[in-house]
Length: 321
Image: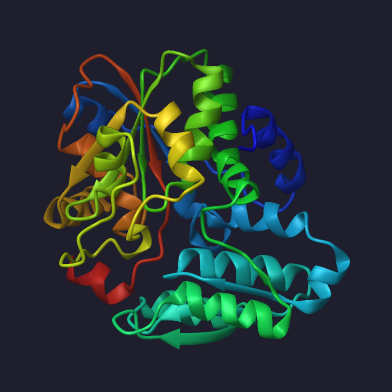
């Protein structure tokens, strides 16, 4: 297996630092008092395209050959990876086709098209996005940009951890706990790898929606476990059938465990974050904060880093909350 480590993330940061926003790391006295610890929120909802996904997409595309770029790209995504690939492609004038579920949030479909990509909608109940993507890649000679199971993507996402560590070092703070959302596992694999290198005693936890706790179950069983197909969640950005074949071994090495949150708890968290941090967060981007606010783990007198991974929520849903 490829020896993935913190050096891959350092290299990725050099590749993309001029292509992404260095997002803030902030704290709130109200929330600190609420949980009894010191919480630092990494605001990737303020990243270009509204999520951390631009980091991985930019790193992957930066490593393609001129021929790859000339032939164009294809990707599949429920929305955030779609927007990231479309935006990064637009910056380099690369043709992009993006496969998205027909029930994806309208804001994500609209933004992907606005960034110049051709959007192909599919029915997730009857069609398999990986098969559609592979077919287009082969027939049109396009490069497939996977959403998480790719070392270049993971390294790119890990640059958010690089920024967290730099900021904490600047403040002379050593974190005890890291909470991060987890779907396919690319973001937490990259960020936790770097944070564990910088802070060896940190405990990192994958946070997932109820019914989609495949990483938690896989960590407990030390092998990949798939989700049962009968569940639904509002956390569309982090719903995947199972952990990635590349991401899971990295997470098995770096993570202390998994935490599960419910949709109703996530809705309450989105409101609290809007009221007290003045930020807009999508459901999948709010699960790590939900784990903190509902005290799923002991944070008394501890320093906790919480990933806010995305802010692409339909305004109608946000208004209803």
